[in-house]
Image (cartoon, rainbow, N blue to C red):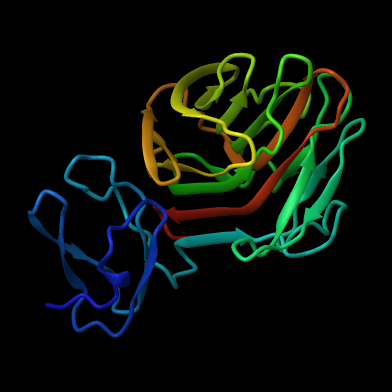
Length: 287
């Protein structure tokens, strides 16, 4: 059976979305990287799918998220094409703004590849900063598959005389004065490592994976977190490449999308860029 809904017959990476429209069957044959053929059963003929895990050597998918079923699925996406700079006016969702001394919010001129880019400042006060969040009790871990993705860029890196830290992920604690106590997130903490790290924290007890991917100035990175339906494993990806899994200290609290920074050394407000934010959830038990 032909599979015309796969885009350009190319290799699918984590986060790839495609549509299954007017198919003749809900049973779809898929050839894995290792050459074996498996059959995937989908709930309906018209379905939106997203690849969420291809970590194993033969490209096995962890799960798919069937679309157009509001009782099971939530999909939030923000391309930041608005011009608002106050809470409730930022982006299309919209976001709540966390502010501190000297913190700034602005927008970067659109380019050929970015529709909208929001520019967030670290602030000027020590142990203070700012960022964005969508509430803090939105999504309970362990109630369904969750995918969180950010595309970020740091034009100026953290250095000894002007240090800052940035956190991007799903958090329960919304603060710009300390690392989150409860959450699943990526971190840029140059004082500890020049690389992105990937963490799960439960009441300030953390498990950390060093990605091995150094943060390079003025370079875009797509950071993806995939939490399995049971809430027992979190997989991290950078630019679609698998960087590791965490199975300990995964919080069971309700979490929400958060991107935030804090200044730790110096008084210069340093800006970083956010191109888009994407959150998806597929509930185990339909609502």
